[in-house]
Length: 297
Image (cartoon, rainbow, N blue to C red; front, side, top):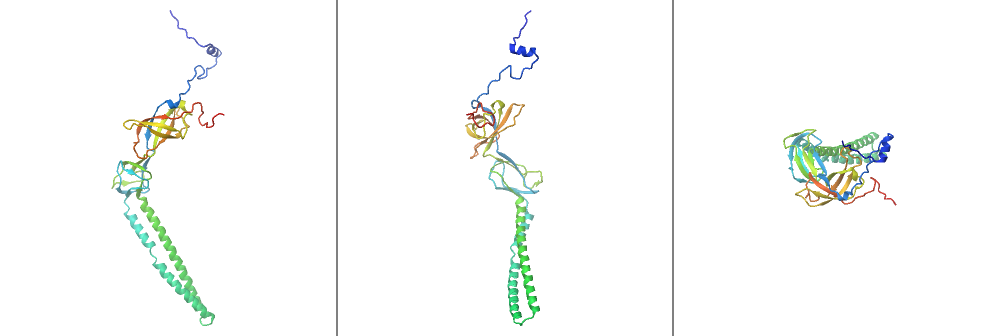
């Protein structure tokens, strides 16, 4: 009968004989990490932001000015909720704020009361007018002055009511917070929007966001601000330059990877989001520790 004999290194025999545990990686040397510049990694091109556009108030959708695939700009009106009551309140507030007749009448009355008081003051000094008449004139002047101040305060409050009414109208106006495209219309004109229901889905496509998961062995070779080359899948083809914006410091132990995010300029919106790609990092930093930016002297 043949017996299989396994040869064990002498150092390992000594460790086993004395009951010593072999440290992980001690018996077998780990291969050095490759240069990441020589490796292509899988990635995904995604929108920079995806927004579920909603409104701070509930109501019936009056109109939507955009449809799926339309290009939109930040601040653009894309629709509105029914706002006839709020619009009427705004017009009423504007009419009140523009009413200056009461102030004009009181200003004219105040001028008259002041002249009367000054005239009676001179007559009273020369003993041609009673003290009572002078006091009545002074009282009328002061009361009219207070009435004018109150009228001006009411005008200021009316102007604040205009601002408040305008804000209520603006809350029912849907404006895009980003430059991008319309991905989906979630509600239609005539439907009721409650507190939990968004109206539109919008996506920002410039710049695009590239997500890639890199094996842990390459950690320390990628730095924020470095460039990389993106190879989108067909039919787009061609190559594009992107910049590293995020390098995760918390790794995924289960998959042995860490995340890297890149910004991919897309000013003419030629690239679509939601496609696969390959990425090759232009620079590598073999031998550097993660976060070590000072080379040894």
